[in-house]
Image (tube, rainbow, N blue to C red; front, top):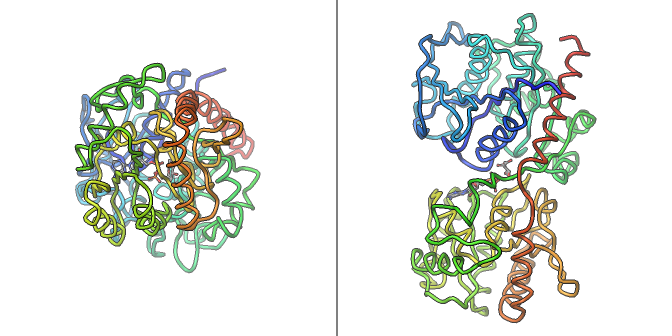
Length: 488
Ligand code: ADP
Ligand code: GLC
């Protein structure tokens, strides 16, 4: 089969910049596509916080981006995804992207990302490299397919098919109507079956209507978002486009997420020799001020503090848990101030038993994956979730709510059969979570062999990107032939 030219247009790419799992996905899938022989390239904005990993080269030619009343001029930097030859282009525009935050809630977010969408297409034209398919990620690049379908229709770049991946339907990118002028889109697109929602422009909806094909990051989430309960107001669109929508579960980068080689850990270990895991636990207890004790179950959390993640349920369950169970908690996260304060307070009330680090810390995240005994993820909704897969790979059985990608990646433990990879509960209530923490705790104390079995089965799972990468290639080909048939 002929190799494909694929452009990833994305607001995040690991290891340069990441706010969540989207960055991990965009930093990992292209490696696998390149290994399959495809010409894949990535484009991302140059925020003030981007880490300049590896060698960077500034392209000589300035980039003129046609937005608003005049052309905005940008610089293009070129580097490669570490360990590969996959080109990564960063668009520098101090005024729009010089700040550190990727998203935040800047009032000009729509302008920033409309500019980025147009810039991504302009870079391809400037490089004289025309992708056959553009893989766009979430609302920030939702206007990109609209540009291709409307004002750029007559340019060669418009032959590109688009695959739009929903990483999280909850964030849709509402923008004032004036964004239409800035993005230089026809006003005729401001209608409910295109880019309009509630009198504004909805960038996610724009992507859903205008992309050739749509994917989301797990099969269960692909079903949930078609229903009024899980569709965040866009279920109708997703049912309408249901024949073009597919759920493909994310993989993980098994090269960088490997307890046997992870340089962030004080000791490495593998399924065959778990001794290093105890050293990681000790280091984690020391780092977060927990009592150093090898025989107390240590529950870990690594999360954005957002309603979606169900950490209010954990905050509500914790006083009872700590009242009756001999357990420890290691919590890493940041986000909603209310949750940050709640976890600070719980940690202060339970010194030696609950350690909370409020912030974003990639090294500590790895130490928690390795040093904890159970990984807690009580999500109300979870499109895919990567941390539960990392935890299984690190021999830390996850405790999850049955939603979205957690259903597709964690198999509930069945005591009588000795099967499963984690502890799963259904109701999004503090009580159900409390009971399940109790179940995990009892398994740890009373059925050590069963607990070890859970660890081993988790570590034996194959979450490598390869299988899903092949599915994406099929979607790209499907999109390309659909675009050709449509004659655009
Ligand atoms: P989401 O993208 O919804 O946040 P995922 O599970 O897909 O959830 O991915 C989260 C990613 O972000 C993981 O790589 C996780 O380790 C990382 N992460 C989340 N919060 C933190 C934090 N406070 N510090 C370091 N890494 C974090
Ligand atoms: C989003 C989702 C998360 C998913 C990630 C990568 O941030 O919240 O569930 O794993 O994207 O696709």
